[in-house]
Every structure is written in C-alpha cells, then in structure tokens.
Image (tube, rainbow, N blue to C red; front, side, top):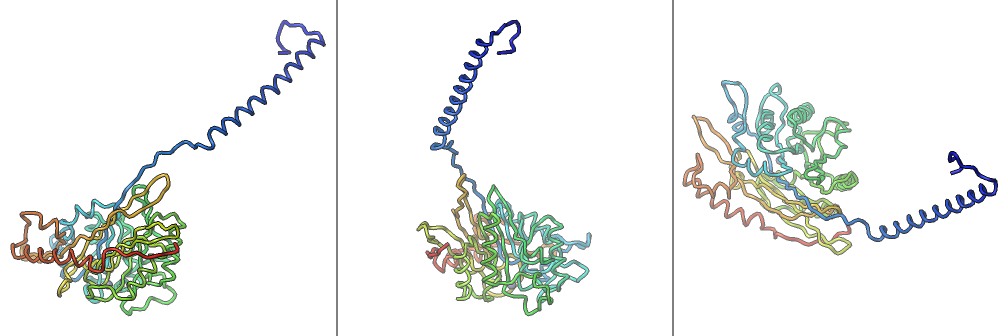
Length: 406
Ligand SMILES: [Zn+2]
C-alpha cells in the first residue's frame, strides 16, 4: 500500500496506515488460525467414511503326482521323441483352472532326461509334466516329499530349475540356503497367501552334509516359526503342505492330529496333507481366540493320489480340496467361507494299443451322459466310489472347535 504510485503520505498518516496494516494482519492471522482449528474440530471426530467391500479367491489343492514308468510311457510321442501329459488333466481342467491358487505335490524328481527316466523306487519323470500341470491351471507345485532326493542334490536342483523355467512357482525344496529361508507368497485378488511345504523324510536317503536347506523337513518348532515369519511379512493366510502320515491308512494317526492341532493354534489357516496314497478326511476347525470370536481353519489329512498307477483298494482315488476365502476391506480381515473335497479317480483306458491315464472328477463325470472311454460297468464302479468317498471325506467329524491363545 505504501508503494502505491501517485499517492503522497505525511508521516502521521503513514503511521496511521501502518497501525491499521499491523492490526489488520493480526486480525487476519487470528481468523485463519481459528478457521483451521474449526476445520480440524469438524473433521477429526468424523473421518471420511470408507465404504466396506469384500474380495474372494479360491484355493484348490490335489495330492500326489506319482509318476510310475507306465505314466511316463503313456505320455511318449515316438514321432516327435518327446512327452506330453496334457491328457492326464483334461477332465479336471475346468475345476483347476477356475481357482486362483492351484497346488499339486510333485512326487517325483524332474531331473532331466540326462539322468534317465525311472519309476518306483527312485522316481525321475519328464519335465513336460509341468507343462501339462500348468496348462490345467496349476500354478504352485510343492516338491518336498520322500522322493525329493531320489536323484540326489542334482535332482533337487534340476527339478526346481525345470519347474521355474516353465513359469511355475515351487516350494519345499531349495537350491541354496538363502532360497530355503524365503517364504513363498502368492497374491490373488489382493489376498496374500504364504505357502509352506514340509516332508517327514526322504526315504532314508541322507540329505548331503551341510546342505539341509535342500529339502524342507517337518520340524514343529521351525514350522511354527515360519508361520510367524509369514504373518510378519504380510501374509493374510498361511497354507501349510505336510507330506506325512502312514501309507494306505484311511484315517490320520495320533502324530498327524497332534501336529495339525499345534499348527492351527500357531496360526496356520489351511493344512494340506499328502503321502498316504489314499484319501484321509478333512476337518473344519473353529478356533476360539482370546477375543472369543470363532475363526475357521481348513485341514485335509491326505488328498490321496491324483495321478499314479498303484494297485490296491482306494489307491486310485484322490480329492480336489477346495477352500474359498474372503477378505473384507478396509479392515483387511480374512475368513474361510467354503470348504469342499471333490473326489477324483485315476482312470486307465487303451487307445491305439497304448495305455492312457486321466483324472476323472467323479461328480462332474457321472453327471454327463456320455463320457468317452468309460463303459457302463466302469461308470457303476465310479458311482459306488463317489458314494463311499462322500461320507469318507467327512468321517472324522466335519467340525471341531478348539481354543487358542492366538
Ligand atoms: Zn510320499
């Protein structure tokens, strides 16, 4: 104001103006401060409401991909001197590919042709198995089982390389100590799932000295620690794959039940059992926390054989274990909202004098009028198997409530 052109100021007038200006400034500052305070008072008790919304994602898991030589031979294409196993999964593809996380246990090494393909007791199958699994929708493979070391350290490393080369993630074995310490996290629909995998042992094949990182072994304390680490790293859900239990036993033993309950109390959300080569039941745990609220946890003790060629009752049967989860935003709470076990059967059929294998989802298959290579007699057998399996998968008691401090 003082610098306005063409105006003359006497000293007294100037002082007057200055006084007005100073008091005006003060007045102005005060008003601004009051306004700010008022604004804060108005907004702080009532934060802008964020609309609550939910997102869902589904996990499916299957048991062992047990690659006997008959299965390896079934995928051989002599004209191209290569392998293709897509036919194993054609019938289950709609179910597997509809899931967000689709997990299978690779119970063989994929060590490469240079190490020679072999079946029981030291498995090495063509890595094209991964191509077929990927095409069917599987996106996570667990590699810790009693056959992990069938082709030694090189077998472990080659198996991981062959899986990762095809853009599929794996867990349960590792090439280095650093890799073994990393927790696999797979995010789908903004839901972050940690996937951990362990085996009871390696069929008596010793883990090379100083290289315990190669195969992840069941060690209750370590698993509990890994679950806590996974939570710290931002896991909304922790899924634990356990290769355990007694072969050919259709019910879990005391050791399996003890371990499962301990891991549930430690914060595992989903537990996927494999190894017995037959299906053991699933169970939905209602875990009561300190806050008194019930949280749901899903466990299947054994998912049976998904592919394989074992003789003996129930050994051709498996399940697709399906768990639907929901995350609520902005609270970021996650809950299990649906648990299902869909029975499957390994079906053999002959085409052009060649034995073929495929996995049939029993309910879906029996609901179809015509299924190629399935005779009316075979259909009747599958019908009986489905009926029996539907009650078997729940035979341990579908729900169990436990208390936990977590
Ligand atoms: Zn096994």
